[in-house]
Amino acid sequence: RKEVEQDPGPFNVPEGATVAFNCTYSNSASQSFFWYRQDCRKEPKLLMSVYSSGNEDGRFTAQLNRASQYISLLIRDSKLSDSATYLCVVTQTGANNLFFGTGTRLTVIP
Amino acid sequence: GAGVSQTPSNKVTEKGKYVELRCDPISGHTALYWYRQSLGQGPEFLIYFQGTGAADDSGLPNDRFFAVRPEGSVSTLKIQRTERGDSAVYLCASSLMGPPVEQFFGPGTRLTVL
Image (cartoon, rainbow over all chains, first blue to last red; front, side):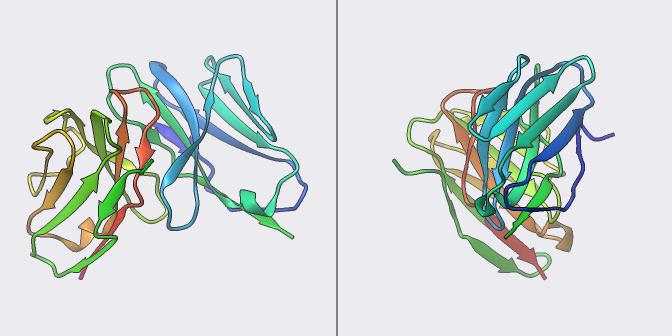
């Protein structure tokens, strides 16, 4: 079983739409949680950290449910520039690396 | 300031050859990581350096893969007797200190083994 599971999509949404991505993780000892964004043929870049209380950064809202081992990312008022792959990422206590999901591909259509 | 840089950006080689991939981390970052990303997948961990030493090489797939960081800055990932299955994007990341702080990724080296 993979450490982090995501729906690979693709998600094709019109400009202005609200879209939500979900992710589950298998290890209850997972420690820190992130969403990274990766543009085509580019490196992953940190979009936002995910906190237990939920957090918001402009049009982006991240939620964490430790009991269900579930993370979500909500994007409101989608822009064309939001088109990218969104990677769900966790760290685990005692492990040195980031564990990545396969990524969910989003295309925002004019 | 300058981000993580990787060279070459693309490398095409033949099966059985030896390749070296270079990573130049952000200045002052003590932690350095190598990941491998295959098409349609997320990056997978290979090895982590804290300073000059490999603190965790549990992600290296086999003994054909080796990495060094002799002066605690630049790192080289070395692959011997390359196989077609080694074709992927090799990403390097660095962070100011060890996990779980934010890791900054380089643009990657796209390796193609013919």
